[in-house]
Image 1 (cartoon, each protein chain N blue to C red):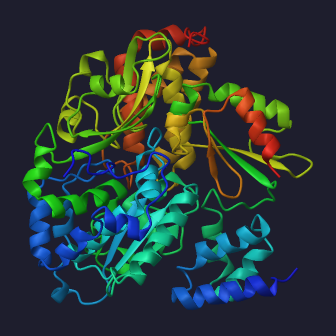
Image 2 (image 1 turned 60 degrees about the vertical axis):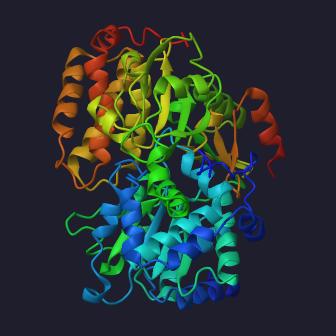
Image 3 (image 1 turned 120 degrees about the vertical axis):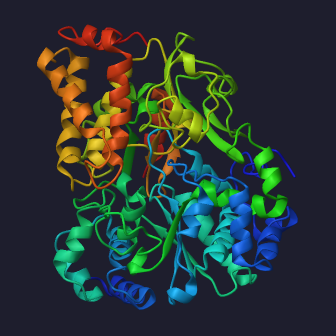
Length: 418
Length: 157
């Protein structure tokens, strides 16, 4: 047992283990054990461990699994999809888990498939993660040759770009070969997913935690955490810090501690604000440095844990500029289906850029506020891309009104300061 | 130009393996791109015929994914990250240096066919910002400085 279950066995240079090396470290013990336990009991163990999905939304993993219909009521193929389409600005954690620990992903997927009665496992990985695609493909072949897959089919599906593929219904559309357009929910994937069949989609980190729950028990898993949400979290810290990196730590570790572990704030050394969970999370300030970073506490603070990968700004960095980058990104990656997203995001990006350049007029600012007000509520678009994109914009407008006003007519007052 | 026999055989294998021809669409485009560097308009009906889907269906997929290239690209594709963490660590200076050295903007290819420059985010290298992914293996490079940038460019084929 270790307090770093996720990353404790990883090599610093990320070279993945061969099957023999992984076995020597206790690999596949949890799988062998899980296969002797009825699926319902595996599910109960994960439930008792209070594991919240690590893809961003933090939905309880066991509850998601329980949405899958009983196999008797829906005979035929059922799918477990592992989402490795990591593309959230600021996120670089799944890359590490896929590159350095492919057998851990396979173990977790096999156990999750057992619990949900899945007949096939598909791991979708973004095209840029070529080392991960190659390493996991090799590891699956090894596991299959050694008999660990039993009758299960498991394969890697390399994607080909576009952030929206990471949205679970868009991901399903991508696996069906078409344009990755999000689908209306309900029906949820558990009822009608890939090819209309029961489907569960789990993030790479969620899946990677599963074997440890089976190996060490739910109580142990909960005890790893500082809060009610179980386990460790693979946090990331980047932006204006001296030593950016990934840090596995107790769920509920504070931003203060994580920024310290990343060498402290760089630039001026004074923290202006941070995004706790990647590009689509609201800006928090120094007053939030001691809030436990789990899903519940971050939501209460007005942000979200999201991917748990912090983007840090010192007080010489401009949050208008950072938000302009985010808006340009989400505008580019919108699938274009819903009008507020297709039209609103490019306008937001343009206005923010105009503020930076000094060409923005007061009426532009009113339009920016309009976009944030109209596009933020849920239900204005099929998926959460636009709502997520609005989080940094709305919090920018609320948190930095004076700084934004200072941009009018003369452009960014911080330009060149960083 | 018709599909080379090798590609034709690979596509047939792919369809046989996938079972559902639609599910094979993206992978078929990846195969053709791996062999030819990009997917030309002429190839769309040819690949569609091998798969047994309509050219329109295949084109819908081909035009959606940003890393299926529909114009010729250089031998080395540079996907330069313009995300927040890279922006906070000098990505704009690297962009300017790259553009002036290569004499091209985003989406363009050098006249000698060596480099194509594309902006991308996030490349999952925030701990190595400013970062880029480069070449056929999509190698992550960073943190980029004027010196490391030169080394990377000189090593490229």
